[in-house]
Image (cartoon, rainbow, N blue to C red; front, side):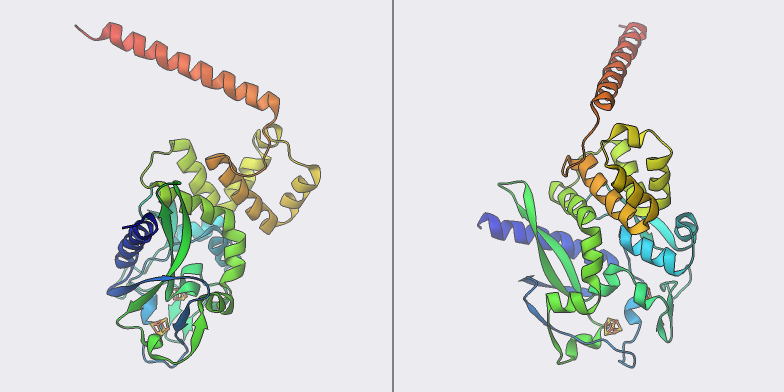
Length: 303
Ligand code: SF4
Ligand code: SF4
């Protein structure tokens, strides 16, 4: 088995586990698909299975999903998160994430579905837009990186696959309005896909908390930037500060590129020398304190 096939098989097996945990009965078609690959699919009000895909499912919310939904519903981030979501983890990683909370009754349906369809359709999450397509990552074992691929999800109840309408996957994504979401979420997706490539590696508690805050709550990130030492720690152009103060989408994009920088050192953020020095001194002091505590503990322990 060559390393490309091994990467695809491994990526596929992970996405199968992801999908099987999310849906009642599914078939992940074991085919490596690109943006140019064709699928045959159509979904419309009146199809026999209408809204069957909107219950008993796991809808992971990306940062732009949360922004679009809370804006549509006229809520703050805290209000939206408390009312409609719960915490989970991104499969095969230790990264905490927000998912839609399904109704706690026998229907287990999405809080936004009615017999007439999705009540937040224009702002539905990315997972709903992509369906029946999923995205996977093909690991490149020799390089420790990965590239994206697509898969087709075929659930027994979904009749859309019997339709004759053909789409290239990229056409499907554009038709569903996914490309805007993908563009805005791009840095976040890079962080997630990289974490999936690395698997269950250890992240510090601080990194996990920052990941969760940036992924789910832009109001909290705004406070973090404007009410902490953040702006003294980084060299940020005054016009960028003005933009992120006045424009929520700019703040969202900024938060995701900063997340990528802080988790993987990727991107062009510059830490001020003074802040670097303070961080170094704090690290040394923490290590010294740790060593002192360990010495004390070893003195107290009986031989
Ligand atoms: S958000 Fe809309 S499309 Fe997505 S599961 Fe809920 S009702 Fe269905
Ligand atoms: S065709 Fe598939 S995606 Fe569309 S409503 Fe039916 S089950 Fe859901």
